Image (cartoon, rainbow, N blue to C red; front, side):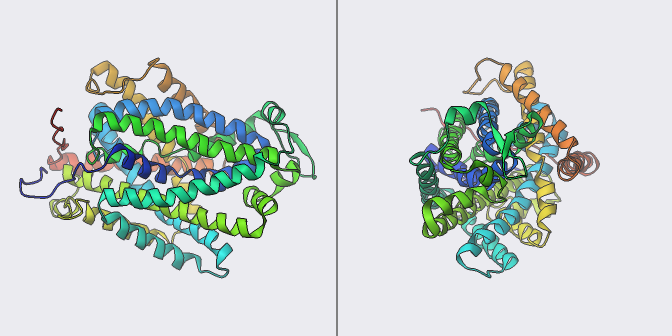
Length: 463
């Protein structure tokens, strides 16, 4: 459905710096280190450095894919629009199912995680009510203008980066280990109080977690209709987001690895990063950093709510749902120029999901990124062949090496998931079910109504 001439629409009021701040907030280097990095360090000890390095290499390949496609289609639909325009509408609806499901489930998962960190400061804090309150607050914040949200997320991001800098300095200024040795000969806890070499298979499984630590640099594609000079800005934000996250995450992890006096004890801990901070900086620093981690999670939730609202808004504007629902979800706030109804709807769904068990949420989210990355890799190669991405301002170098390298890495992640019956395989099956649900909904419902039309926003006037 095309908005009427007198209806408010998304407004191009955000600079590339604002887009960068929101993207980094969603990517959240703090979550990458304090939560994901802590888990990987527990799995493979000093092998965390190799795992995160591999994730950065994959990130560079995927960033070039996101930059080329995002510049070609700087639309609020994001991956849903890109896949639909390049690979066909069924592929677009497959991405829509993955995105809407992932964004709705990510909010309560983050809220529950934030409650755990706040309990370090406020013992006895109830987890589910705290998560409900966090989801409700971030949803209301996300209704505000995207420019105001960029300022708000940028402020919290500064606290997050400060916590990462303190963590890096605690280790790098008091180094006990040899950096080169830790890189060339990674060691992990052996279960008896000592260390042993990290098996290659363990590195492969842990590297899959490392990929998640950098996920989010491509989320700027969902804000393409609110960015100034979008075709150029999208690519710049993608690359700068990954570069800043790489530095912000690797330095603290290097500091923890070389700054730990007892790697075996650290890796054997279920919470190695918090333990290192407490031992190196004392209880006051540990509490302050816990507060910064909670702020980082809250910040990431705002970015997720912003993205979720825009994804649902784009699908309604295209006519993906019954007509009455489309009209409501495609409304834009006259003052804030935000898709307020769609954002509130995503928030309401996330509130309901706060009562879903945490392990179920983790399984649901486990492989959505892999499916999205693989789809975009195929899309960028097909787009080059059928010329559907010719309008991009960010054609990647060394094509087709980046998408092929990414697909090879993703195949390895899928193989590792298939060998993991506890979480990997169930997550893979849930992802396949979501993809099938998206395609099935299009074939059985949308195509029969014959009202779906992709809405392309007006181009910015040439300067």
